[in-house]
Image (spheres, helix red, strand yellow):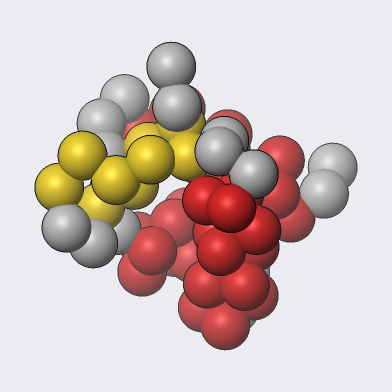
Length: 59
């Protein structure tokens, strides 16, 4: 499973918008890796931010 898939799965499992720090904790990935992957996911339109600093998969 790729880092991006781990991040998306963590967001789906949370069932709500979550912060990058919580994603790092849930996935066990380093925060810098989470930030880098989330930037790519945002640019590709796979995730969105309903509230500042909180993210969720785009529905």
